Image 1 (tube, one colour):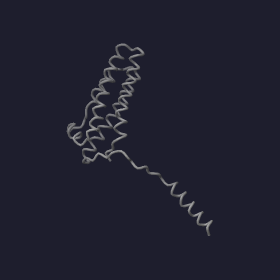
Image 2 (cartoon, rainbow, N blue to C red):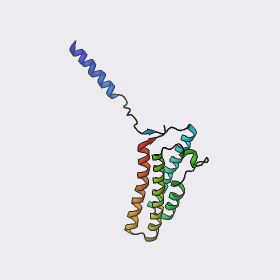
Image 3 (cartoon, rainbow, N blue to C red):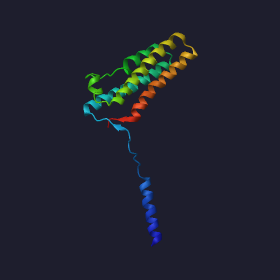
Length: 148
């Protein structure tokens, strides 16, 4: 009987461990109305497309276009209601992350313009670091906050 109980316990443990694991999401939930959340998510999706476009332009050495995209699409919100409609729901630290992204986008834009002029190793390295600053701002915020 003891062997059977041990076998059943082992089977139960195996079944429990083989099911889909769900890790608890420890990021801070930022509560906001559904329409505001949806607008924020659309803006973040646009930022992701903008980042992809920036990387593509940089790889093609089209630095002026990359700078323009950073200036126009990473530094501002594109929702019709205006930025305040979304950001008034942000905790202060999340607003700081938004500002970090804006600063990184401005730095990238300046680095891209320098790379366009000089096209030397130093300017390309600066451009790489500026791209890293953008992705660091994104991952820092996404790693700390969630909206659903």
